[in-house]
Image 1 (cartoon, rainbow, N blue to C red):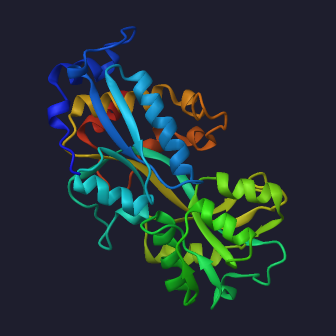
Image 2: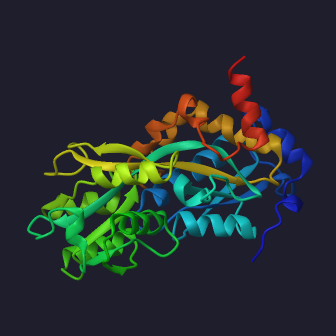
Length: 319
């Protein structure tokens, strides 16, 4: 199904949504409402959690707008759906978006940079795997098909010269398979902490494999997409601080969404950040990644251009 947002984005709805002009007003006639779809991620992933929080937040704070989440494989799947017109907004890791020449695909732009993901390489505490090269020949989850985890873990393995028995499982499936001995290790490119790994560590002792060497290799091979980082000791029960790789996450939008609407969305993300840390009325789990959302880093989208509506909001903030 290909979406054409224009028939639903009536001029009145766009103008009313811009700049918070409807603060204090409630329902709008259905013809004036803006219906948007936001691609998130798989079960057990931060994308699913923060995407739901963003959708609820925008629906509440931008009068006349309703945002529905669309589950997905994550980054690569979200980019595909955006380009096909199946969704209007989507989350993606920066490395999965930009091409080898450093450019972004046409037709898409960024609203902002949200937070940074860390590449996790998880094993059970008693595993014989001690370092990255020990993955050779082992059963390793590379994440779901079309996910950012798949994209980044395959790059890490390729540039590390390691051939593993790759399997494609979602975050939740990977944690369950690791727990049950069906795989030997799992990659996860996600925010810290991530629900699937948190739950696994709460019930069973796990370890994180250091990825400092892989961070250096990826940083050198793909400037702008990666940075060395550390998963803190406070992230998971019983797991010490571990060197890792950080990748920025962006909120993408189709270029054909009206500038005034995108400006209103940008404004509500940055002026009500604190409320996004609550995952929703039906989910008491916090969204700690939302604390990374701020104006200073939000504009840092590397070679991915800002949508004109988002650029206008950031420009006005500097005045």
